[in-house]
Length: 224
Length: 224
DNA sequence: TACTAATTGTGAAGCATTTCACATAGTTAT
DNA sequence: ATAACTATGTGAAATGCTTCACAATTAGTA
Ligand SMILES: NC(=O)c1ccc[n+]([C@@H]2O[C@H](COP(=O)([O-])OP(=O)(O)OC[C@H]3O[C@@H](n4cnc5c(N)ncnc54)[C@H](O)[C@@H]3O)[C@@H](O)[C@H]2O)c1
Ligand SMILES: NC(=O)c1ccc[n+]([C@@H]2O[C@H](COP(=O)([O-])OP(=O)(O)OC[C@H]3O[C@@H](n4cnc5c(N)ncnc54)[C@H](O)[C@@H]3O)[C@@H](O)[C@H]2O)c1
Image (cartoon, rainbow over the protein chains, first blue to last red):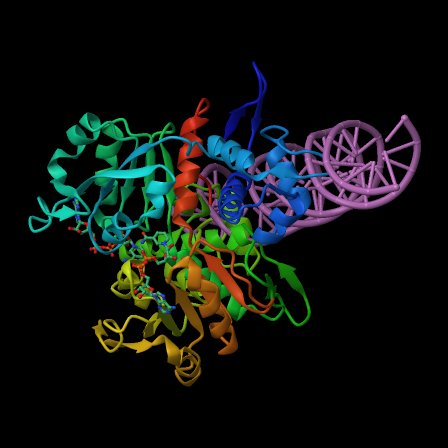
């Protein structure tokens, strides 16, 4: 992923760096609530189990936000980090598949706080279509494409069975949506300008399983 | 993570490699259902959007499973990969926090197929304690430690609010459980011999947000 | 003002992962 | 049996990421 660095310069920012920026955001939110004025790279690193050098290097890709001898101003840095992540605004999100996982996500209040507003729900089950979930009426999947466009949806969460996920995604792509969070355990095919992130819980259990079986030389939590 | 490579040799296997091994497992499961006898590194790579060299290198860390000129035997490789991941057996799993996410996980049948058997549920809500979820009676969180030990639980899924997650985890650690899958958005403190994996959905949405905002040079799905 | 202590920002070094490229070894066809 | 073809397994090169180490800068103190 490239980011603006000036009039012409551009630099590739690694996926790991962005994931850590998310961690900094989380830590800064805590620190702000706890009324800290400033925070050092050391303290930030301690809270998210990273190294101070890593924290400073990550932030340095985006600018100089700290004060030597003092650290970073918490509220200010949080604002900068929000800007970097693009969560200093509202994202209109739709969710397809109001099943077990889908329902859980709709009820989750933290997403709203970060600007992710789930404003449309879709399903193909007649018992679910028309029903009300947290103030949102479930739409018929048949109207997916038109409603995504008319609703100016920018992100879609896919929580349908793996067998139908690709068809749904093909429709989402046709509606010009460029960001998809996918819970189905399948490799979605999308054009190169569409961003897909996969949430694969089985994969994490498998990692734990691997770690246990090979745990002759133990270690702590996995890194970011 | 180190793995056995012979009587004495040992090699560090990267987290990325293990995640890709999970992808191979998934692809091989499909291929087996579709009655493929063999598969090439090229085809495996195509299915999971990787490079053939990467596939071969990953597998080579664990042995030579292919036949030159032909490829890999699907069923056999799937068995080897299961063994590598440690999912050629049953894992006794407990889940703490039978809320939105927790309930979704209990209902999920795919975990069982991979050997992850959720056999115990815990909550502190009197209305939930004693209730039946998919044949499992929800236990009182007060009995967490003893029931984890008596139930020979090896992995615990934590799906409680972030505010109480650390206390729960302290108890889980005391029960000698060495593997935790955590859904709470918090950095859990555990001794170095306890494995923790975090499932952080907000982080993935944030990545999408970042990608959209910085999407001057678009790209497809993120790599593993 | 001058001095001490703290902490950033960043090239460069060190380490890890991915890709390359090809020798090797098996398959298929004739 | 041989030739042509295919695809693995793997050192070595290339690339990418993390850590090191220190000059630079600021705050605090007297
Ligand atoms: N439940 C879990 O814990 C869990 C864990 C990991 C992955 N997943 C994955 O998440 C996805 C959803 O899982 P779930 O447990 O919520 O399943 P679910 O069956 O509870 O929900 C799926 C929903 O999708 C709807 N649906 C089915 N076909 C549709 C279509 N063509 N158009 C629109 N809607 C359609 C169904 O009506 C249902 O409401 C699956 O791909 C699953 O593999 C689930
Ligand atoms: N729901 C989502 O979509 C979502 C998304 C991302 C992360 N998360 C995280 O997952 C976790 C669970 O989320 P949720 O939406 O399922 O919440 P929830 O409130 O629906 O469920 C939490 C459950 O934990 C139980 N609980 C609370 N305190 C407890 C205690 N001390 N001991 C035992 N049980 C206790 C509650 O009774 C409840 O059943 C939270 O940490 C949340 O931040 C949820």
